[in-house]
Amino acid sequence: MPNYFRTNIQSMLGYAPGEQPQGGGFIKLNTNENPYPPSPAVGTAVHEALARGLQKYPDPMAGAFCRQASELLGVPPNWILAGNGSDDILTIVTRALVGEGQRLRQPYPSYILYRTLAELQGAKCEDVPFEPDWSLPKSFGQAADDLKLVFLANPNSPSGTVLPPEAVLELAERLPCPLLVDEAYADFAESNCIDLVAKSEKIMVSRTLSKSYALAGLRFGYLVAQPQLIEQFVKVKDSYNCDALSIAAATAAIADQTWLAETRAKILATRGRLAAALRNLGFIGPNSQANFVWAIHRSRSVRPIYEELKAQRILVRYMAYPGWSDGLRITVGTDAEIETCVQRLREIV
Image 1: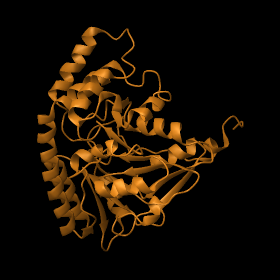
Image 2 (image 1 turned 180 degrees about the horizontal axis):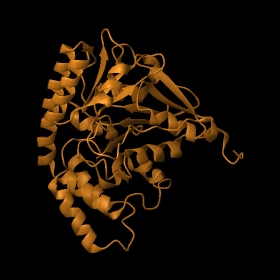
Image 3 (image 1 turned 30 degrees about the horizontal axis):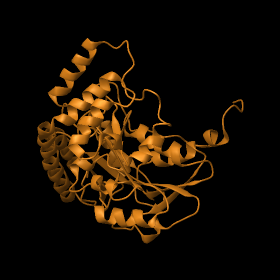
Image 4 (image 1 turned 60 degrees about the vertical axis):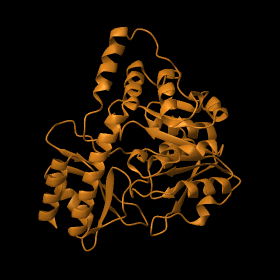
């Protein structure tokens, strides 16, 4: 290949999303999608947006969404930045804060996109391993001259574990740089860090509507941060990073908190049954506060289990981390999907 590309681009592997089969017939438990349809209000909002027409550009700041989210979260609208999924938010923040040769820190294992974002910048990605109980060592908050950004998935993927808000605040106070708390799964957890944003300029919180609001196919996320930070991030984002349909749908989705509460309750109940069934089959893993569970088997390799499930058209996520045990991350599907998955697992193990 001609040497057209930057050296860091040529040497990086790139982010590999979970399998997305385009044909039917799969029980899909590999990418933490919500198994239920979104709020009916979403469809109504999209139809109304279509009726208004798509020939003009959308609101570049997604003002309608920010005002609705402001009421829900208890922060001013100018503390919110909308994005094309929370991955867009993570990209904006990384581009704005981390330069070539500088350092981005993440816990390990965690969301594998963080490393990709560092590599795109030509930056260093520092992995700080979790303790065996999925707590963070003191070194995670250690200062370094070239440290410009710290990512903390909370709840974490693949473990589903959570660092409590008081520990997050203490961590931010020790760090010399901003801390982005990635709360993609926070609606399934017992706590969140939104209130910390007002307590520390360093703390930012990202959210997505892909998981709890069942809008993975739409692509919408947002950042909550103090306005002096939002002002700088706006300079980095694409001019129109959210389209008119996604703004309308996302605004309608977060307005329907009754739907969210009912859907969340169903997912948490199914999560509990899945975790109990896995323990009975010899799997171990931490208690999850997300819409998935992390499973390692006491006596068997999990890779063949993943492959056998896939052969039977049940997709779960096999994840292997060098220096850490591999495992299966299993999304909480419907009761029927989980019942079928557990039955197949029972036959395999």
